[in-house]
Length: 79
Image (tube, rainbow, N blue to C red; front, side, top):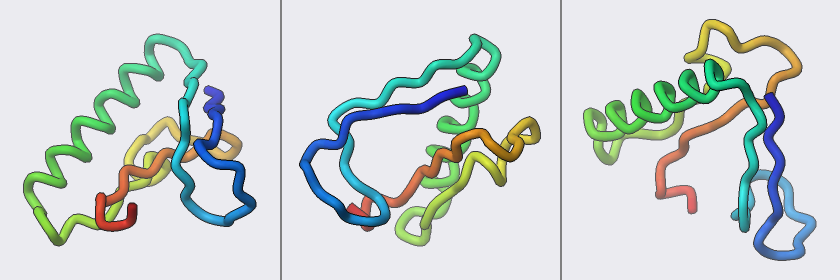
């Protein structure tokens, strides 16, 4: 799996940045796993409400391995 993107602004900041677009190159099996991860994160957001912080794909997906990109689903409070 590869994830690439274009940042919205020309900045040299560290940490999270707003992306103009994101491209995910992966097999259908991995795309389905990502969809499940995103749905599960949304369920946890609903359950925890304002207490929701973030989830990492690397912590939730059994098939994640070193070298794959991590995806974080973060609370809107960080944006």
